[in-house]
Image (cartoon, rainbow, N blue to C red; front, side, top):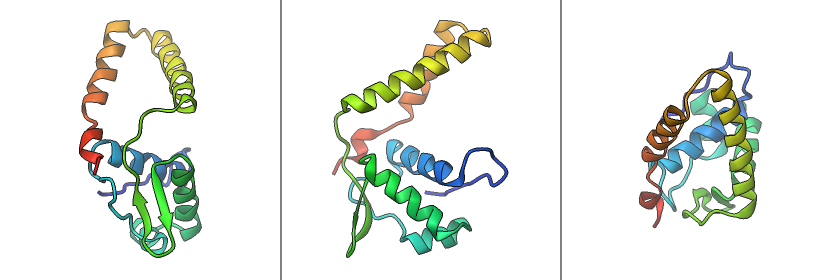
Length: 129
C-alpha cells in the first residue's frame, strides 16, 4: 500500500495517514493479521515525524482497526460487525454530506449512485482471515 500525504492540506497529517490506512483495509489492500510498518519505518517512508505515526496508530487502535503488540508491532484487526457508536458517527457524517450535496444542487439519485460506487470499491470480506 502506497501512502500519499499532502503536506499543504488543511487536514492534519495524522488524519490523512489514518484515513489512508482505513481505506487500505476497506479495499483489501491490507488484510486481517497483516503487519503495518513499525512507527519508525512508517515515519521514514512517509517523511514525517514518528510521533505523528504513533498518534495515528493509537487512534486506529482505539477505533478497533489495528491491534498493537510489543513483540509483533501493529497488525490489522479482522472485520467486525458495526457498533452503535460507529452507526451514530456514520449517520452524522452522512447527514452533513447529504446537506452539502443538496446545497450544491446534487440530486438524490446521483448522491446515492456515488455512495454505491464507493461502497463497491471496498472488499471487507477479503480482509477477514
